[in-house]
Length: 416
Figure 1 (tube, rainbow, N blue to C red):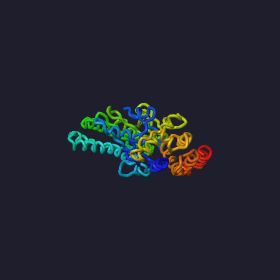
Figure 2: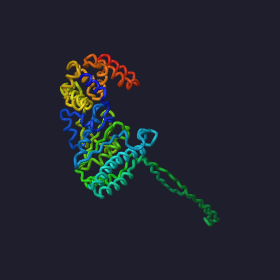
Figure 3: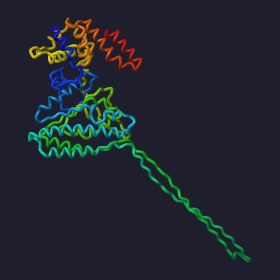
């Protein structure tokens, strides 16, 4: 039995974006109020470090909504939208061009998934021609989206001045009798040029896009559309407020649309304050709530019992998906009993993962490889954790001497 569990651990998929959506639904673990918060209809930011399960959570939400008759979910990976992945990050291109392509590609991704849904309904006779017509109009409005950069206005001013001179000569025997007068004059024309530059702003047919999208949802018979944006932090930070402002003006005002954004908090910029005290983008807390942070549910130091229960259930579900049908009944407690020498060995794994499911899965895989046909013990987990952190984390810190030295200290003195 131990060999079978270790073999199942070795077959685990390490990343959610490389896993089948059906498998992601089967292996999703609800802990505390996580699912209740995730399925609320409020616009919401989903924070979490790399590997904490943001993609897994959004995929689960998307798959659960797609099976409801009057709801539809659109899941967009912002790393892969558009035809040219390097366009947005190319700092050699003007900000206006990069921003325009980002906004157009994001709206086009929403339009394309709605069109696919409409065409599926058309085949079954459930979608009217009106919905397809509205989608065509929406595509035309999307094509008119533009980001307008600094505009230089040049004005010419002219002024004219005149000069005049008079001279007189009088000669007379008994008084003035003869007068000679000479007059000369001229005009001087002065011209000045004034150049004024505007502030970078973007101009979008907000009302047209918003109204057409709202009418399309009614024509499709959808009572709610869920727009789920994954990998927000992959967008260059200077472009993030542009996309956020598009969402605030075009999508958030639609009453039957819910937007969820998965992001890394320290790498996200949702708002830019403008010179007139207005702002461009999304105001966190006002326009969208930020009450869902996966670190709150999974970090061992925050709540040991909840973190232990989460990772036990997570690994059990992943192992169940790899076992034969007759063995797919293992819960978290049984997994810990059958795979580890003692409870403290599993607690060591949870603590080493520090709230990151991706790290927990990789440490479990290395532990299973080293345990071979034996149960996984504390020394095995510690050795596997050190190997994983050296392999995955050290390469990212090599460019910074202080960060590298700190990581080595953490590996040697804390983890080991």
